[in-house]
Length: 112
Image 1 (cartoon, one colour):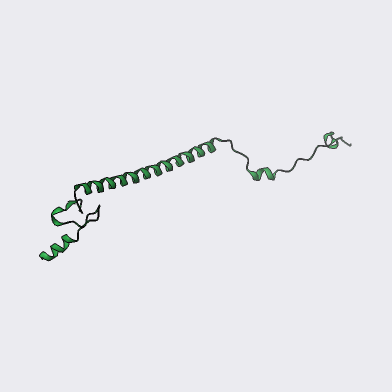
Image 2: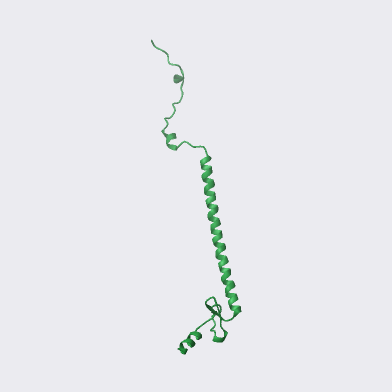
């Protein structure tokens, strides 16, 4: 039983530096072993910086999505306010106007 505990302690390495840790000099925090308090502080500061960077990226993405949604809403409002145009099908369906000539401009005479 004692041999298993010795082998377990011998295999522990510092999470930050990767150095093998002796039993009397280990620093255990948050479920992990560190060489000393300084190595733990460095690890924690790097971990916090990474979290802050991820949060900043997520906030930037959320702001971009919100801005895009705002632009889409503004476009929809301007489209609703714009006057309705005649559809292209109605324009092409109209008969072409006949050119006016002198004969067509004269009133028709009654031939009785």
